[in-house]
Structure formats: structure tokens, C-alpha cells
Amino acid sequence: MTMCLVWWLWTAMADAGNLKYKDPMQPVAVRVKDLLGRMTLEEKIGQMAQIDRSVANATVMKNYFIGSVLTGGGTELLPDARAQDWVNMINEIQKGSLSTRLGIPMMYGVDAVHGHNNANNATIFPHNVGLGATRNPDLVRRIGAATALEVRATGISFAFSPCIAVKSCC
Image 1 (cartoon, rainbow, N blue to C red):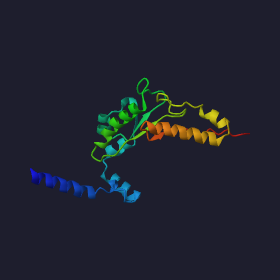
Image 2 (cartoon, helix red, strand yellow):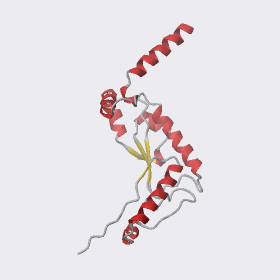
Image 3 (cartoon, rainbow, N blue to C red):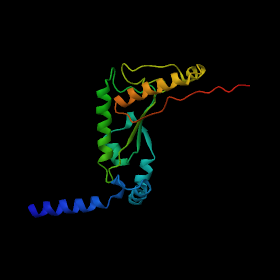
Image 4 (cartoon, rainbow, N blue to C red):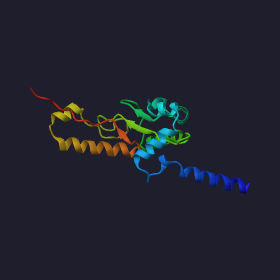
């Protein structure tokens, strides 16, 4: 039994040394080339897919190698969901991604064009065209920072917004 454990640890460590894509000391180009070389066609297709949160779970992420999940506008997690509810849900979905052969983490995005409007007690901001009409870039920057803070507090790594609406004249 001890001999099997030693052999398993040795092979795991030896294999980890060959996983350039997991080595943060490697240049990005080397990591990408190594990872793509290891991926099957199914894994590459799955990584290019983004699915809605309503159909995402650990099993789907693991079986289909999904690369990204989106909470779109109006998709409610739970009535009165707290930030911790969001974090727990995202972590559960992430477990499926990390349990795949290559352990590629998924990216989670949220439609936050008016702030993090899917989260309970989040700040809601005016429509982007209204913000653009203010012609106040500092205001739009501060709204973006506030939205980013609220989105990140729920465990989400990227938001589809805010954007700046630009009105051309004449």
C-alpha cells in the first residue's frame, strides 16, 4: 500500500512538471500552445461555448467542457439573493469545470448594463444612452467602478457593461 502511494505521488509530481499550461512562470504563448495541444476537439468546442446560468451545473460543465456561463438580464438567482448566494452558486458550477481532465476554470459573466441589477440591494444606474447624454466621462467611470465592485463581491469575474453611448452629431 505504501509503495503504491509513493509511486502515485511520484507520477503525479512528474506529470505536473510537464503541464506547462499550469506553470505561471512560463510565457503565455508557451502555456497556450501546450494547453491547445492537449485539448480534444470536444474540449475546444466546449471552451468556446457560453451557456445561460439556468442550464449550468457542475455536471453540465464537466461533461461538455463549457468555457463560460452568463447570467443575462432579468435572470434571477433566488428572490432576495445575497452576495454569498451568488458566490456559492458560482463555486458549485466551477467545481464541475475544475474536475475535467485539464481542469480549465470557467469564466462567469453577468449582464450588468444598469449596475448589478440581478443582485439583491445592488445599485441600479440609468440606461447607457442616458449616461452618454450626460457627456460626463468621470461620472461614467465612477458608475463602472461601482458596478465592478458589486459584481466582484458576488464572485463574478466579468460583466457585460457598462458601456459608453456616444452620440455623433450632424
